[in-house]
Image: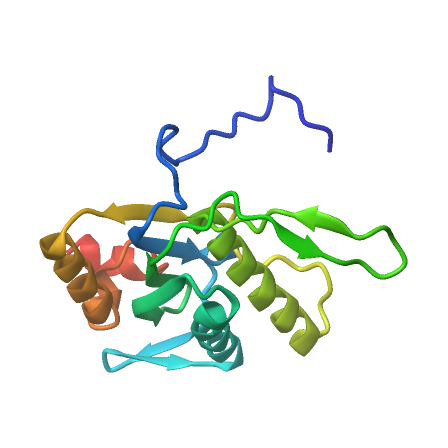
Length: 186
């Protein structure tokens, strides 16, 4: 479908004046397409990953290998979403890298080192592997976009780490839990 500004009102949730390649810590939440519980189950307050959940975990842990200027902090895969803390340790914006291509003229490309590029690469790698596993080429796994929070200080970092680590135990109250409304209404 062609973009029509009368019907498509996409608004970015990012801060327009902020450079998301800036050295610092960021919290991200990425949700499954349709908020379906595709990644595993919570059993007695603990997350039990299925094959898809394990792929998510593996790809997230590969991030620092693919992007040496990134370190990972606390993270968790939930039944229908993922929480993680990413630390960009070095700004590499504007660094041009030689990118030879087979059968074409070699060129230069700028490796995007923003938080958005990190999340985009992660989502893409997971989706590709899951679609191969289930023989479902082109199927969507993730919601468009993601939620982020710029971590401002140690107190903020500590609170987000706590929230992530408690997430499985509080699943029945989580607004991302399709059955959570049963518990929230009591």
